[in-house]
Image (cartoon, rainbow, N blue to C red; front, side, top):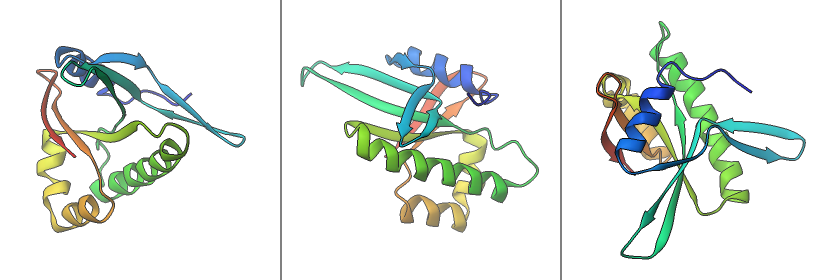
Length: 138
């Protein structure tokens, strides 16, 4: 199992504050002989619809010296996990959790906007210090 991101607990606490239940930490996926581990699988009851909403969240700190290298790694994992989720857990949506500074940095640049649009990235923007979700971008 891979190491947890530095912001793992902050995102987890923010989701709980927002009414989500942590169902899997991590969410294990299997495709063929390969295993993958998405950081979190969470759910919550949608009272009006009497249904449950389930999402998978991959947390990325973008803490290296190169925002582009971080983006390349995050996008690769995101697309890989989304492909597998679409095949085996069709009711899950995948979100990439990033800090506000990351969203206002690389994702506000033309390359970030292109990647969000072209690859239909769902983002969860969080404040690590306050352990709060600031924005959902489906």
